[in-house]
Amino acid sequence: MASLVLASCSPRRAALLVEAGFEFEAVSPRVQEKFDVDLTLRELTLWNAIRKGMSVAQMHPDKVILAADTLVALEDEIIGKPEDLNEAAKMLRRLSGRTHGVCSAVFIYQQTSGRSATYHEFSRVTFRRLNSARIKSYFAKVDPLDKAGAYAAQGIGAEIIEKIDGSYTNVVGLPMERTLAALAEFGVSAKSG
Image (cartoon, rainbow, N blue to C red; front, side, top):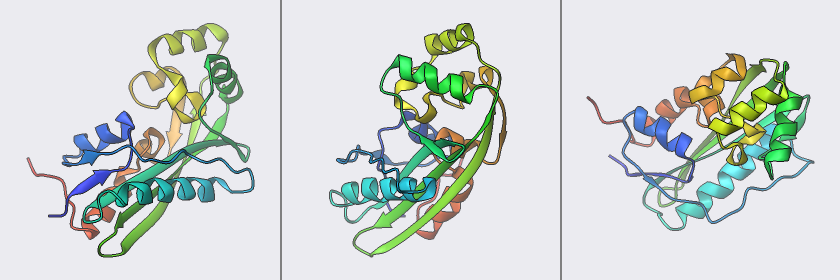
């Protein structure tokens, strides 16, 4: 069985893989996520996922590298991670009572074999109406600064999310429905039991 490396320091992506029964090593990519207004949501997430994966593959050429990038978009405007709590609150006020898109791109690569796979997943998330008190309460429980759109679907996400159309794990940061099958193509499978 091939060894798996998660090219991410995201505790959410790691938790999804652990819950699915995978053994892996998590390695933080040596690249910064890029933002380019000329790219579409799908192009930008794929660009970042490939950059992350290639960065880690150089250190682990024999292993299967799994990299992903997730972004939020409202009416075709991409919303990244907030710089501070003020910006995070503005993001949640914009998303309040509205439906937005969440796109994840996944890049799987093994350098020595030259094999790679890429795919996207898109989900729609509808927020509850949020007032300042609800946003402040949410921020007391969740750190919004390392999350696209300043929120997390897992845990207490139900406090602010009304519904998700599409893959829930995509909104968390790694669309597991497609990732399980894609990793199997590289000889990586979850341990049974």
